[in-house]
Length: 506
Image 1: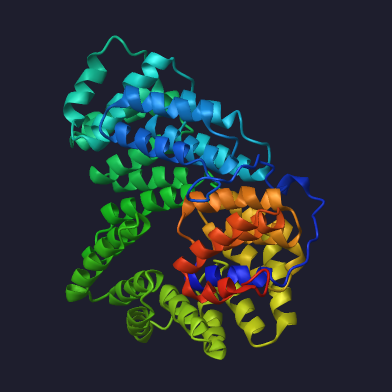
Image 2: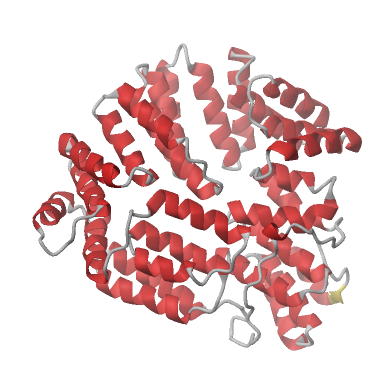
């Protein structure tokens, strides 16, 4: 989601009125809330749990796996019920191979679509075919830590093969394959990943490793075939969609024959890994010799700059790409987004319409609709949104943008966005704000718990929490929170000086 869309999200919620959907599959989260807010930092999140989580991760990376396991286990037993936190920890434990602890958290989750989408994706991506006893879990987690974080792939792989302590299972064979892959022994890596997949052919993490091995072995046709198999699994959540997309870009990087195309896909891979500086470096180097595919390089460079809050350079490179190829989708989309941000809505509409002709993606159509809305042609915008929503019910940008013309659906659409993008702080703040407007302060507090966990220095978190506490009669704490808010954003100083003024702010 672009920066502009996130900034507009809370303001659009100001237009909404509370209308609750009859569709219970998208019910609001019914997590327990924290009632006692009295610590020095005036926060609702248990900082002990947050610190314990950081400690557990740090110990795991340092291969102190038994101590890490104990910390994670303490989290499982002591953490207050919070669906967001349980999912966050559960995904991390699954990544580390601590499947027994992840299951304990999953078993405590409330049953709703928000939790269901992430649990399904987590199982499809990480989970072995069967559960292991605690001893095997610890030994294999230690192996994963050494392979990934401690440059001990060769030694660890040998230990895994020769250890009689660990029972045979698909996850063990996956780790052996991973160890050989990290040691650049591709034939043995392929042998063992095939064994793992034979035992568990639905694990996407296994298939992803196989695709990378084949690509590195220059078995291009086979690698692309595995990639096609991977893409048959439909992931709902943004986190796991990005994992699949990163595998795709890596395979395309390895299998492309043209060097410029290789650089393009490598840069896209880095960009998806949040390594945009590396992406820019690769793309700038590629421009020196780029000929046939220079428009693709320029368009991606423009997009990377734009998504990293540099619209000036984004415009520069997107314009170059467009001049070279008038049908370059990424260049058209970037130009459209930039023109929209600059409030040049007629130009953005023109570029979005051109981009729509180049792709089946919904992004240009969402852009057309929001441009019509900005041009005060709301009827046209509403028709487009309603048509798109019939076939794209889990598209994040579409759901958020459509609220501008269908504000009564806020209770229905915002939880959907939360269900596919766990770390979208603006969504949690938006849900909190809407709950405050509706007088549901306990629910608002639950959403604010999640917002704090994502970014404890977000000024809107402190402002909205001050509204909650003021409504509950804790004026002293509310005022201290408001002071904290104004320290983070001086625009709120006037609210501190004059009382609350507009009670809800914007």
